[in-house]
Length: 289
Image (cartoon, rainbow, N blue to C red; front, top):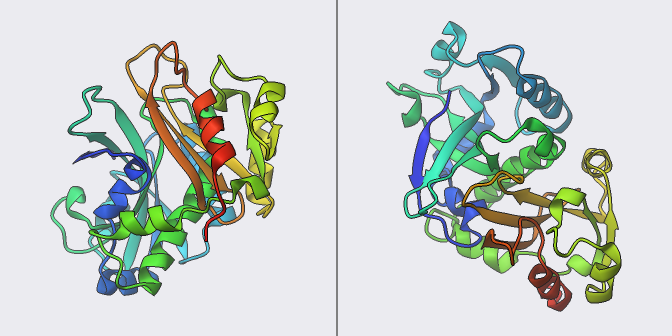
């Protein structure tokens, strides 16, 4: 089920660089809207991911009708050749110029058609989930937001046919919402760098509302489309001892809009999670015009 993609990572590009190569053509997007989306499950029926993605799609996917199919099954091999079908699937990616050579899991939307191989199927939307090999508990509660981001990206590119692989990054940069301080920022313990994780210290630096929450409380905000809440989508090695980067994105619980993005190489001075430097940047963020 896994494929290796080669791409270049740069800043916010981690979140949307793959959107550079996954902006569908107007014809592809029109085709997608007429499809039934097949949610691709892992071959092992006992894996927790299968349960999680089923539950998530049933709650959060409303752009197209959907069904479930198992990768490597005869049903999948037949379905992927049908242009009237699309697929929600997890793929592995790494970045050619990244010396750490880390692999990431991306949630992708692909179109079916007469393609000899799975990796020839066109992508029209992609979003990072986590470092490959990370346990589901670290991202399960955020899957609803990731599904909504993919659907938002598809609708955005369909409604704005001038957006393409050359200008989509610029669009996301320009339209990143900066009024994060007008929302309540939910953070979990794992979102915070271990050398700056006191809510009291954070509030002394950051003038917006920030609350320490459990993953279950964050998921509740996502599931209820809470318009007053933003939260952190961190993609990191989750404490494993390997040379790696940490990517911090702040996202709307209701609309999956991007409010903030940063990344850094993990070190003793800059541990995994939101660092003191991030809080300084957030404190200075100005409302988008």
